Length: 257
Ligand code: FES
Image 1 (cartoon, rainbow, N blue to C red):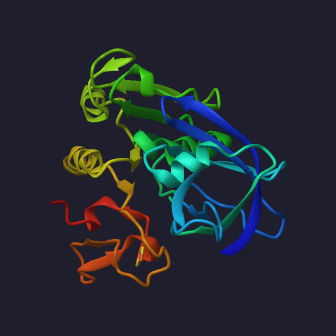
Image 2: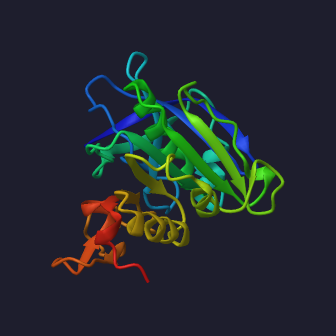
């Protein structure tokens, strides 16, 4: 993990209040993996805002360009949306445990809301390794559906709660519509609202499908000091801090409430 000034190369609006910010990634900063996070100090020294964690949405090795997808939902992200190419942003990362492959070969990537970014990163990363991942993304309605850069190997399904775009229903409704053939050798990686992650876990568990989730807890310090991001677990640890022991966990480790 390193602190550096990243140059903003592009700040692209993807959908209503959703943006993708492309950042230069210095040569001496470790290559990031899907699930990892950067913490941004949006206006260093000018405003009282704390560092904000954002999951990475892409990384291009040749050009060393990374990106995040963020939702404008408060003063800090409102200021981020005003940033222009050439501005710099104080960046700390990459950090956190990332999604790691097991033995299964049939990827099901499930995302919703700001969980879109890490799932797009994961799907494109798997496609570059020769997988044909299924990417299932859920939104409330069509106005929130982002335009994404995806590998042709990624099989994308967009679900909307109100049926205004793509599959009518939630991501878990779509998972329930998969056939047993679709589920052969499957594994799930998911990121999004807790209610969605819980539903994905309880879909995968009885089918014996390994499931990893990236949690989106609110983080204050981002470095393990404030204990503001703890979640309960089913193992001997009882509690973990998402910022230091996550954000990616096997879903059976989380005590879903
Ligand atoms: S955000 Fe402070 S301990 Fe995790």
